[in-house]
Image (cartoon, rainbow, N blue to C red; front, side, top):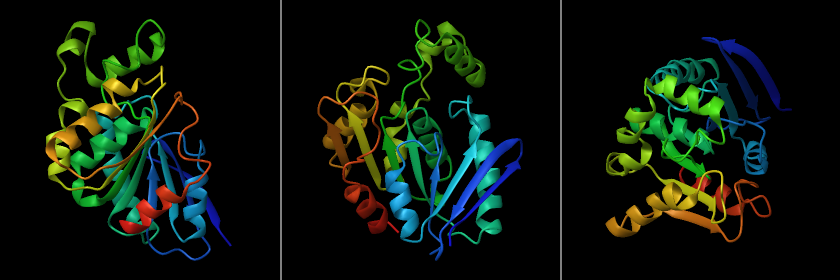
Length: 229
């Protein structure tokens, strides 16, 4: 019988769903734990533990990465988990997942990014999300001018990321008007094509920001995780 654990760690809410027969492997979703989670539910049935650490509204900033690593050191011991996780970064969660992976590559087996934010200049946009825009600037100690020249976005660090040879799965919609594909996920696709780097990706024709994932058939996601377990 699966078990769910809820508690607080360093001020952040923790949710862990442990399967009936855990295999030690774990999925760390960085935001929106229960959103579009059919693949995670399917993997849970296969023995994968689901983990969430809620430190929202930090936009993957340097402090959030430090908090994530403190949590990582705690969670692998507390639940006897593998020393390497599978990161799931949906939307703004892509910032957390990418930035954590590039800072602590030794802790990551694979990364799955879904309609990810990979450039702070493209989301959150001030005219549409003023609250989030202000939070993001504060998190990174930026202002509107320094944001324009900020060069530590995931899209700026692709060479460093792929040097670590962390397998990546990327899923996005080509009609996404919230986190536009051309200036986010497509940058990864184009970089990998140019450099001859293996990347598994699915661009959903006509799909907007939602729905995330491949909910009609989660097989590609499940196979990607299993292949890299």
